[in-house]
Length: 125
Image (cartoon, rainbow, N blue to C red; front, side):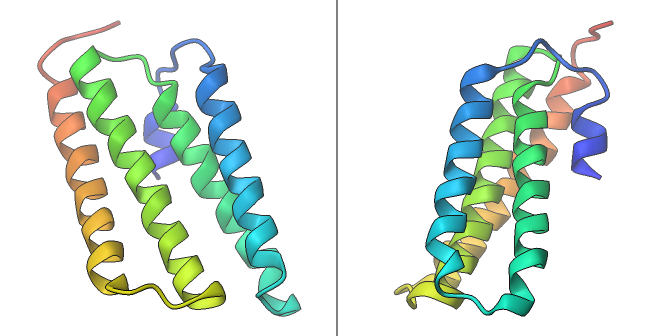
């Protein structure tokens, strides 16, 4: 749903965001590949692709600067939260993982929601 909402009004391509997010996803996949079983590989690749597209869509939204920054921060925190889950589950347990995972996830959702409310303060066609 976030991909659908974020991509309704796109700005021009953000090549730096695309490159950074795709590179991060590839590095995560390389790290995870050796630590997950084959039955999970395809679902994890599909999910990683999905959240990467979600974050890229957030980086290419056409909106006011305040809304843009907040939603993008939320999307990046969302990717970070899910990455922490994967690392904690499949690579090595992370100390204070619950606080880190839920903290980044809660702030991700908060910034995305507040960012969308800020979008409503200025009308961009």
